[in-house]
Amino acid sequence: MNASPLCALATVSPGGRAHINHMYFAWSDRYEVIWISDPESLHSRNLTRNSSAAVTIYASNQVWGRPDRGIQLFGTAGVGAGKTAREARRVYGNRFRDYDAEGDSLPVYRFTPRTVKLFDERALAPVTFVTARVVRDGLTWLKTEVSV
Image (cartoon, rainbow, N blue to C red; front, side, top):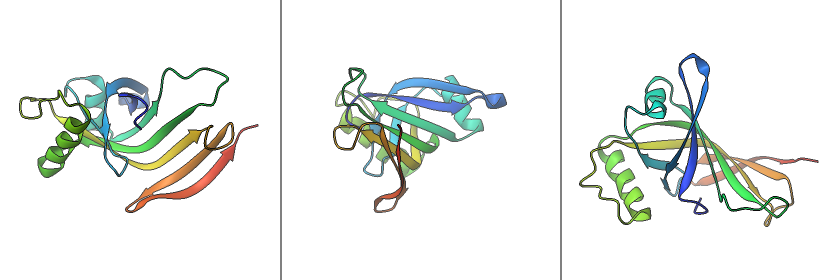
């Protein structure tokens, strides 16, 4: 998750249409994705109606034909409040040192993953995808897929 400061967030628009947004993010040790956003942005408005979301993270400088890696996360997201928001702002500030948590009036959002899908062709075989469930102590393997 440290491969890029940006991720892509997919949300569901009214009528079930997909929407995607690129944003700066931080993450917790439980694979939660944290970001700061205008509540009037389309992805923020989408999350108030439907918390279903997905996130993908990868280094955009990877070269086709060479070993790639990335992670896809599937779960729910929404605005943080109280202690959750304070902790999320701390996590975000740890990644982005110039972020002023005290001076920022925008809400903090937290994505909580249920499952993750990982590909790392350096550590695994080419076109191998590992899916795991996020549990209290980390990850629990669900399946491995190999595309031919």
